[in-house]
Length: 632
Image (cartoon, rainbow, N blue to C red; front, side, top):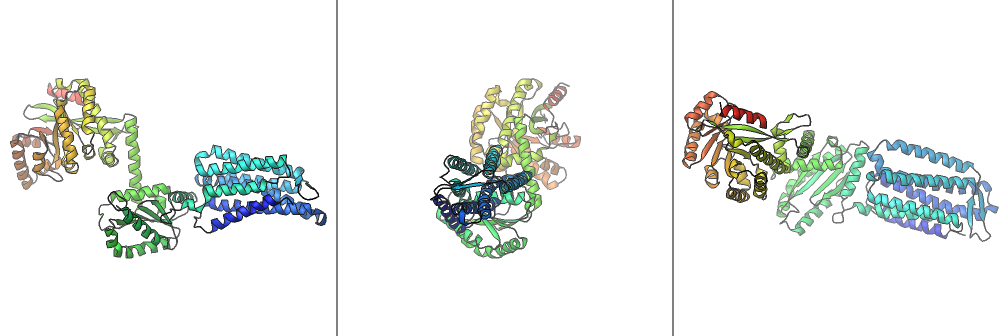
């Protein structure tokens, strides 16, 4: 009988089942649909074999039984097409819940086609030796129509929803459909070759080896599930609105430069052995130094957390010997974010905010932290858009020279406008821009605008000798700072003596060598420097000695303390005497009243800056202010 090809298909499927059953796997929707398609294909092959046997021996078997088996085989072919489409749509349903309604329509179509197959007449044929066996008639034609419909629906879904389907999955299903079409054509042209069922088995094999092989979801070094598996699993949990609980483990410094690779791998392997035995946990390795445990049960997650809190401190010395400090993060409410990737972003954000990196091995992640992270992300995008849409503005606060009795300079201050034209307070974006490095681009934009404003409005004719421009800590650590700023001034043809760059004490502490090199290049070009915020942080007169600055700016808090605290007054008088004794000038920031101004004038402070004269002003308002005040 002509059943050799079908038997090969059955043997192939049995081999796949043996491989599949011996491996660890995740509880994924696509995996369940794959198994459904697998067993339906196995059933289809068995019905194919049984129908051939019954057709050959139909003279000795009741007609209704032979007809029922043959039609059941035909219906199973259509059902395989439906399950193939369901498998393709498994990830789409996770991302588009509305797609489930469309799948229900396909189910109804399958039921209707199946009913017609059973209801329509069928004709059977076999030759004397059973080498040629086939069915024909309306029932068979309905099967072809149903199969072609689902093949078309599969291909259409693969094209229209390609962005929502994994590339490997898409290629595997296309191969499957191609095999099915080729087999149908072959069997249609040569009825002696019963290859449709075998083509289904080959398609299932392609799906298995391309996408559903559990080994594809495992990290070979640790045996944990990998990042791809983590993404698919969390995406499914979020799409089904299921609660779960996360313990993330970061092996701090484990794989950083200088750590021994052997120690790092030993540490990761040791941690993986522990996590694989945690009850109720699905364990993932998402990065070389990052592992994630996901629990569906709150009690099991809490129990694991308490276990780690109890046992980890006992092992700290061993971890330290491997140059590593493990930190655990417990996320009790995963609904504070929207995706698995955002969960990891949240862990990384908490790590970046952690103050105590020595003894604080356990971090409970609060919902508020997620709000802060999203707020910073939104502000990061706002900064990026502001740069792209030229919504970065520069405001200028006048600086008054007591010696010359006029305004001789100004401090340039960055401002960002939102899309409605409203100012975003600097406190909301400056620290974020410094944290993500965007302050470098913001600083360049500000410097370009300052150069353009000075040259375009001939500010020197109004008595403005120079503009103070702030440099952040991040900018001071940028090795290309000097080259970039010199290039900008050359482009605008600005006299370098018109620029005075402000550095802070913290900048000189964190990146002193790079800063000194940059300062030397810019001073050789003709730019001058001020030391900003003197009197805060790590105030030390050695900085004034070491750093080649010509102006020192006393911080507002130091100035205000001068009027209320006798000790502060004594310290400031002494500092002022030494600074001016070195031939440097002093700016008093934060002067707000006439009384304060007169006191600063009496003690011979060189420059005054503050709301007493003016708040920071937009370009044209600043221009009119200087024009009015300096020529009054």
